[in-house]
Length: 330
Image (cartoon, rainbow, N blue to C red; front, top):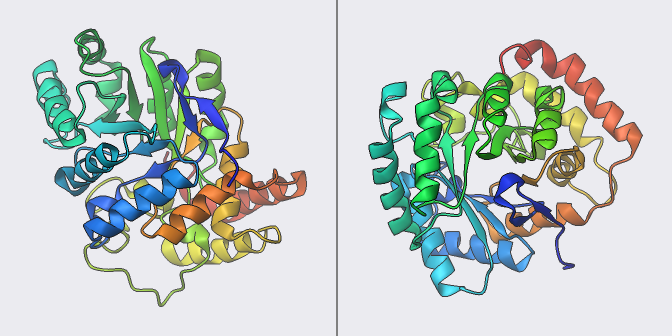
C-alpha cells in the first residue's frame, strides 16, 4: 500500500495519518474482543499506513490503553501518535475537573501506555460548563509544563462546545462527531478550527456502523454493545450511538447512501473518503474489530476524491432524511 497522506494535528505540530484507528471497541465495550485479535488489528492498521491511535482511560477500564502500550513496546518502530482521553472515571460534575484528578488520571494512563509523556490528552466529553472554566485550562497548561502531556485537546458532543474550546489558545485539537449523517460541524466548527490552527479529529465516522450498509431491521447486537443499550441515551449521550439517528429510519437513509458508493469502494470507505475531503479535517478514526476491517478502512485514504455530484447527493440525503431528526440537538 502507498504511504498514507499525513496532516498536521493542529497545535501539536505532529503529523498523523488521515485515517487513524479508534480503539473504543478494543476495550471490549462493543462485545468481547480477544487480546490477540486486538493486537492483530493494531498491527494491520500500522502496516496499512496508520500512524494515529485514539483511545481513552475508560475504554475497557484501561484495557484499550494497556493493549496499545503492549503493542508499542513490541513495535517500537511503529511511529504511532497516541491520543487518549480523561474525565469519565468520575461523576460528571464540573467540580471533578481539577488538577489533582488530572494528575491521577494522567499517572494511570502513562502507566497503561508505558510512556513518561502522553502525546495528547483530551477532555472526554465533560459537562458543558467545563469548557468555560479558566481553572480547567490552567490545570491543563500545568500538565504540559510538568511534561506529563505534550499537548491537550477536547472531545465534544456539540458544535457550541467545540467553538468554546477552539477559542482557548492552548487547545491543540477538537474531536467531534462528523459523518454523512452529521453535517452540522461543517457550518462553523471546521472553519473556526482551521483559522485557529486547531486540529479536527472526526469520530463516529460510520454512525456506529449504520453507514456500512450491512445492518437490517433484524440485526441483533450483543447485550453489552452500546448499540443495544444506548440507543436512546440511556448510558451516555445518544449522539455517540448511530450519531443520534433513530435506527430504523437510519437504515433507510443508509440504503440510499450505499447507492452513492463509487465502483470499487464500499459504503464504509465512501463515508471515510467523504470525511477526509472536508476542509479542516485532520484525521478520521474509524474503529475496527478485525484485520480485514482495519485494512479496508485504511484503503479509503487511497480512493480518488468523490465527485461534486456525490457530495451534493450526500447533502440532499442529510437535509431530507437526517436533519429533521438531529440537526438542532448537536
